[in-house]
Image (cartoon, rainbow, N blue to C red):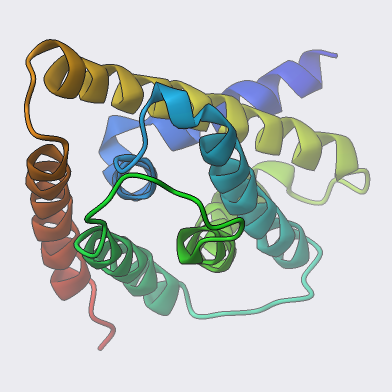
Length: 193
């Protein structure tokens, strides 16, 4: 149980670490279009992202997938830029599509983000033979961290849109613009040589 807690806490701290802001920015870009009332859609969205990064995290830890760290570090902010751009096309906030494009972004981009987590997790695991429990604990920690980030984003959105009566689209564009700018700078700094 102690080992489970260590890996859970590590996963949680990894996603919620302000030094690794790229993961927070991605979750923000994904979720900023939604409000508390959209909690079911948000649950599907975040679960899609978790499934994506869990798949590549496991494949990488089991050495099924090999990749260039430099390219993954570059592609992570690119996923944020693309997700932020997708927010520009949100003009109405009635999300009726059963499987909107943003769900597929979350799943596909989660594959890339999972590779970003994998080196860190591999270094923790070392030569350990039984890694299923650690992998599960790490992913559960990541998911718990993501849920807290999502709740923070929803709370900020509620304050500005519901209480302060900002126009919802303008709020979306304001936050998206900031996320886009930071992610674009990160991508430009990380272009592989």
